[in-house]
Length: 180
Length: 314
Image 1 (cartoon, helix red, strand yellow):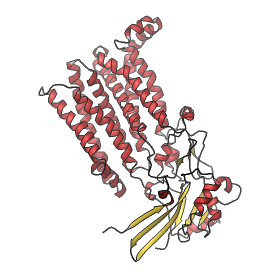
Image 2 (tube, one colour; image 1 turned 60 degrees about the horizontal axis):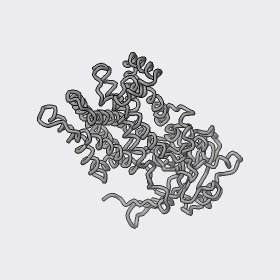
Image 3 (cartoon, one colour; image 1 turned 120 degrees about the vertical axis):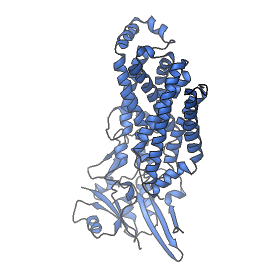
């Protein structure tokens, strides 16, 4: 199993419902975020282009946070997602220094925290919190090893990209390109 | 004209991004770790090349100082942890891919070797204490016999400790300024140079000070070469890496890096050391002090500037 997320930038309207849902579902402390929305405006008037992306931990296949964690607190789950074992975390923040997405934060209790891809929900057959509340169905989670899954079919159609590909971490959050 | 690009993020409005992951504790630790590695390397090399008889009182004091400095550095590391109760977790696993894990174990090996070297070559201040305890006296005699083995261990662990302080940064993928294999060599050269400089501050023997000055001159030349390789390498890798290199070459960190680290901490002391070796200037403790200040600021600049440029947009 290889769990991935596909986010359609053509559908995303930047309402930030995903951010609110995540904070509520995962009890993310004040001032911290497991996901966030980026709005990128390009070009010159009147030819402006607006890209809206809901971003989070990319659950990279080649995750430097896992490689650099000195205690094994950051680890790959069997489904390919990157998780944190709070009991092993020392708060050294080597993982935060290693993340090309700045997707991690220090929880007020001392351990490092980030998006879990809501595996506690996925394991029960429910969608992630952000996917469930997205009003435009821009967020899709699924198993890339399953040839009939919606994420596999969507990625096969192409016109997708990843954020910060130059970091070489093989991210597993894919973005359907916005109107060019 | 470059096309307009504006990026807004949920997080920009709040607090999350923009804060540095690592603060003053890490450069202090990297400096003290490098300095201790340098002290071990300098004394171990002296034992192996010149013999134990040539080990001066200043070198013995340097050896005595090493575990104290290393403990201060580890204290800074401990202060940096946000989950301090879990510090023991470093020693419940060994992770080959994580420089911080390897470094933790190297530190654990460094202490007994340092203790062995201190006991085999005790400083004046320590000798009366050692002579009072028969077991320590016997241990000292035993260690004196094996001093060359200890020196070899000191050499290997000194290199490991010195390189690790640089690899710790370069292993992170996210910071373009640190994305260079040169950092391990740079921190090793700089750490050894600061170790030799510390011995020059302590040394009273004129001949030995000359030997240290020659060694430091070679190390400074090596350090300058690695700095050039590191920055040229970054400047030819791509826009984000060029931006990172510009931070220290012409950006906000340039006065510190070019002015104090390179000029004040490397070029000026190297010139003064070269002049003193030719008899055109007196050996002064200010010269190695400049090397030490330069070494400390080098780590502050690299750790801080490294966190100011990342791949993240929003």
